[in-house]
Amino acid sequence: MATAKFIHDGNSIDYTPGTDVAAGDVVVQGELVGIAKTAIAANLIGAIAVSGVFDVPKATGVSTAITAGANVYWDAANSVATTDDDTGNNKLLGKTVLAAADGDATVRIRLMQ
Image 1 (cartoon, rainbow, N blue to C red):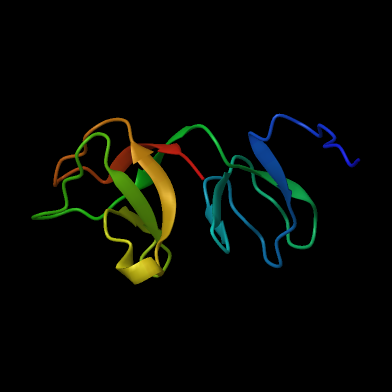
Image 2: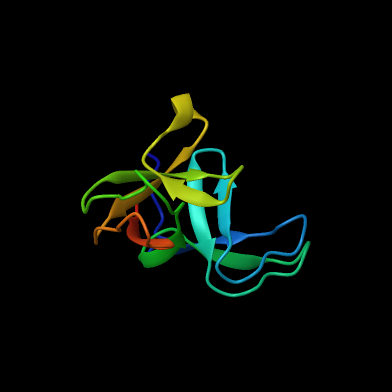
């Protein structure tokens, strides 16, 4: 009978980018979304966080506020968090842990898969 083998706690995972990744960049791999805690050079193994609490960019202006506890998605085309999943094109980033007003440039989220 096959059994599972513990590897690590899973708060971060190995990631080898094709191009340089800056610290704080949001990385989307299919349905998996993570954030680089440190810079990762192209073609070298690094790690992305897949759990934790982060401040991420959001749009500003009228009707861009996000309530606490809302699901937020990563809009890769505009590099912002949004409450719109764009019919599955924007990938689930996590839930907000603090409300963000229209004028706030960031929203605090808890990553979740």
